[in-house]
Length: 502
Image (tube, rainbow, N blue to C red; front, side, top):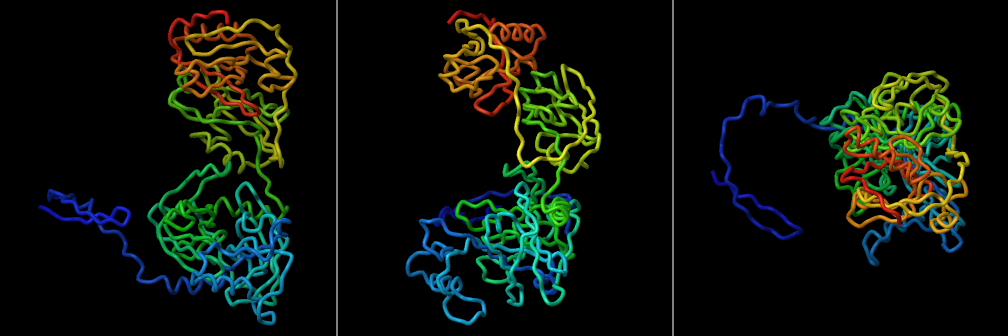
């Protein structure tokens, strides 16, 4: 059967003929699902009063002329006057244009009331840096708000307002039971226009946007526009299963890819903000990286899984438990660590002070250590001990890896801006097209460990390479330091590994 379909490419219309073969499909493939709801109106009428607009202001920079905050609109745009009138409206405080003010409107976002006494959940980025925050209720009432607590890592904030009567509120649902394909409603206050409702479905679960260590977003195609940040994502029972936080968009407008913080992650954090004014999370004190197939092969780990330890905070819980760089954390407190992204969330949700088992892969076998979970400090620092300085020797070229190495010396320390206590072996040259070059190594990088053993001279590196070859491993694992960052890098082994003086 020939069927004609029109395809649109950037405004141009083309046509293509498709030949479709009609075949008999099994009934299960064409099975009907539940019908779409005929209307969301009754549900929306119940939920809208609990969704609010959040406006924050902050002092302008010296170069700015208040008031600002207008959307960037083309001159003469029909929306230019609309937004100008809105931004200068005093919301019932006497009428007319607002007088000049030393503060400017910094952000318009959304929030929702989670307690009739006036507790409001929103995003941290909506109120971060604010000198004052105001909340506009669904009925137009404007109330000053105080910030109870903020969590930068998960982008959450808790506000409080005082009203003369109990406020309409909504309840959190169980985001763990939300399935891909479920209907959802997003309600927010984009651009301060007032309560706006959009509908869609759950598009994906467990999205990681590399925005922070606790990324585990719900993705939805319900349109989320600027100003919807901090607004709720509802299921069909009217419960909040997500907090709308981010969108993926090349233009800044919705293209049907929005992200929400799951309610089961947000609820305990908001409770901690209410009780302590800040979040309290479990802390292990390690830097981790992904276990790639190459890294797993170099460690004899099958299949690739877990989180590779790239650094241990001196004196932290991991250090006291005996964890080392090069360990692969396979389970934590009985929870499987499927990849590096799973570990921060598992640790963060573990009770502070609890003693938990940590199963690691070390030297080709599993070991179980006991760690006492600490509290995540505001800032973490990795301390290093001063190593002995090896004697300066000539460079050594390792042709099989495509690089040259030399011990740390005063000249190399000055040339590559290395610290006074730098340890390891310095990469002085990288051959174009060689294994080291393909893995991104550069002159000035420092090799700290080879196959989980510290090295201080090129001969140490060569000895470890020979040992790895005798074990029949396809690659060797090196801990590389660049500036303040450390990462494990697998380098494929090939050739005889001959060396030559530089």
